[in-house]
Structure formats: C-alpha cells, structure tokens
Amino acid sequence: MPKYLSAYQTTAQWKDFYIIVADLTEIEPIIGDLNADGEISIADVTSLVDVVLRQKSTTASDVNGDGETSVADITALTDLLLSRQ
Image (tube, rainbow, N blue to C red):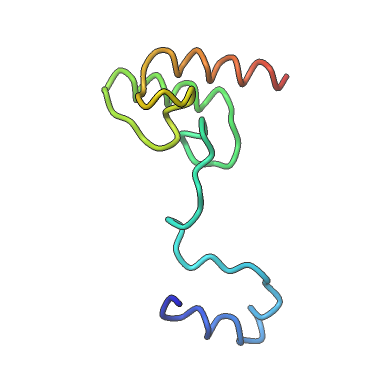
C-alpha cells in the first residue's frame, strides 16, 4: 500500500471517494490516446505523427498492435477516429 493511501481513505474529506489512485503509473493507457487526456481525438493523430517522425514509441502509440510504431499506426488511428463519428 502506498505511503499515504490509508490516511486519505480515513480522512473526512476523502473517505467518500471509493477509488483512490496513488500512483498514476497504475492506470492502463488507452491505445491511441497519445496525449493521455482520456479520449481519442485529432490531437492524438498529430501527436502520433510526431512520434513516428521522431522514431519513438509509447505503450499508446502501437495502435494496430503489431509491436512497432509506424505510419500504419497513423492509418489505424485515423480509421478508429473516423469510425467513431
């Protein structure tokens, strides 16, 4: 248990919160949500283009699940975004 989690759970102001995330690294990233704002949008496509051009990768950048970040992920993310509209 993280250091101060039990204190937050018993404090009057915080006891009504049922889910307390002590460490944000525990949250699973949303595939395609490169800017980590909780949704997939055109901003994520822009971020993914930057990731591909810089030849970097993150957990969220492998949109098509082939194990690498490439132009194919940009296509997959664009298709995903268009299919939601």
